[in-house]
Image (cartoon, rainbow, N blue to C red; front, side, top):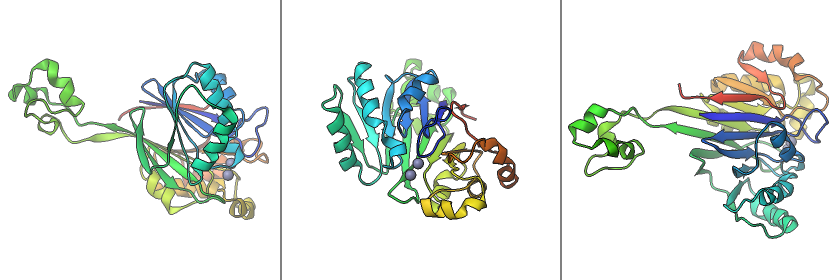
Length: 293
Ligand SMILES: [Zn+2]
Ligand SMILES: [Zn+2]
């Protein structure tokens, strides 16, 4: 099971009624934060979540609206008594940017580990990164909760494995000379979530998002009237995002990162839903719980 909460949906500067774009993802009691603009730590508290169980922070890119909240959040983690390591992932420039951020916070009571790999595991999730198409280096994130195959107790019995050893097989261990493959079916479909902002539409998003349960993406402008802005600033409008969601065959798509000029994103959803019916505007505090099929 993965729980998602959209902490903010705004672009550029936080507004009284709209926090900057960020998402919190929770799996098995641990949390991962995606982006951390000014005020993100307030939004986390606003929606009833704590800071203490945040294991990592995935930054999409180093524009201020996506990471200026980082020094403050790290300091608050320290005040919350954090001593275990926290990872920070980000695109090209991560090392240099984090040197500056840690220069601001000074020494912390916990180690900060930098993650620039294309894929890594945290909080039981496989995390994959992929390039976005923005004005500066930017990356999207795919979070995958894998699901092992079905366990066949009769086979385990047949091979003489004692019942108290079954959980070892189920978690991938070999017991004696019985391997998990001998007593379990093929891997089943897991849960996957993709987060992709700020960006123009791109092949890499379509590939990463193919068939995912939830795609959260850049919806800075409502329609093609703002096409010139979208191209100039490296963003999408709602209709481009809907076409991308349709092409990737996702189950559901949410828009975020709204320009100040959009007062109520909901007003513009009809045209987008004509292209891809299961696309929705997100709002600060929007939640979802994704479960295995
Ligand atoms: Zn932005
Ligand atoms: Zn940006």
